[in-house]
Length: 244
Length: 256
Image 1 (cartoon, chains in turn blue, yellow):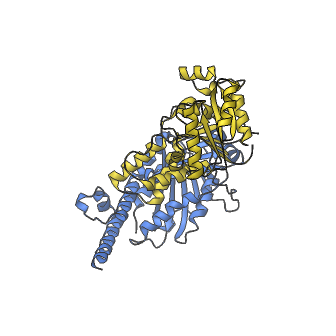
Image 2 (cartoon, one colour):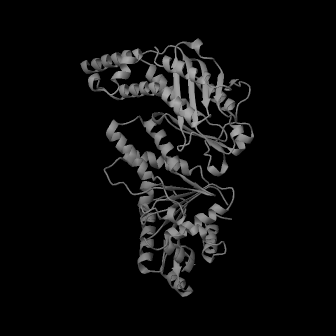
Image 3 (spheres, chains in turn orange, red):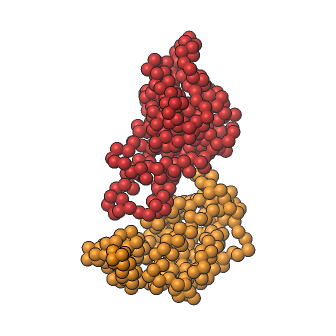
């Protein structure tokens, strides 16, 4: 089942259009110490990413084409965290996953499960607040963490470790954007079709009304084959429940 | 300073509770290395003003936004709602040198959304747990602190002027706290404000059945700052009122 192929391709083209982006391989040997789910207040803050006053986009995209994801790759467009000390930067994050066994029955639940994994991230000197419906992620890195080398590579490696705990995740890639407001805004535009697909999935899961004529997401469902299948399955399930 | 401490200041409206709160926040903020959270639970958002802060968003604004969203688009999942409220509450935090302020705003006025209120209370409690000292400037009634902010505090600080009315309200609050267990607390005491003479304090001491934490003399500088709308954070360190507030905080073990 595929829902995000086009968006993944466009995101990749967008990254390629930037000269000088950096790429690292996931660091499997070193892990950042756990925190105590601390908050990072401004007085202790070394760097802020995607604050409510700045642009911020966070997006999770998956595909069954496992090989199309460059496993363990962390890409950064823009300055890395240690060299941005004292700044508040716009922030874009796209997680690309190669997954196995996603179908109309389990795709929504698995997407949710994957989306919530980021809240399990508990790193010393790092604070994250995120809202899926805003597609925003607001992070703060403490001065101490920054001086000890907290970087995009550290963050990317840590989040990858979480995704690898799910047996159906086969390949993981993370892309970060800290370059400019324009880039993060553009990234938001690029990922907006995915946002609509996710919103449509949320609506399907929350409602038992499948009157597509009056639905705001009719166009989205018509374009995304996978959503159509999901809708049909849910319709049938509802009918079965009614008959019972 | 000892471990985490939560203080709630209550008392009749107009007795200077917010001024005492502001002095305490100023003192706590100037002691390095501790995270201080001031919670303005007064609907008039007086503590924010006394600390020179213009509040951009209150917890009540967040609550209303969420409820309007639910009315418009239907309910979100519980986890999703929790994450959204957590984000919004952190965004509502006003961070300044040495302290952060969270304004609760007006009380609920449109129907019962207990689930939302309880989620917000959980989030506030969780946030408060990340700070070393939490000071709540409450309304007159402690039931409101329980309902809108948190159920458990360490020190219940009753503030009153020397008037019979003010002391009557302080006594009532103490009664509600003791008998109805409206809020769980470890210690409770009275701070007398706007005292003119020592004789007043002595006379009141014989009439009340409360531990007297301390008393502040009527302070022309506070009056003048209040009159001109200046924040009390501008009080000089040599201010006698600050010295008294400091002694009170030391007495209850919040400052050392």
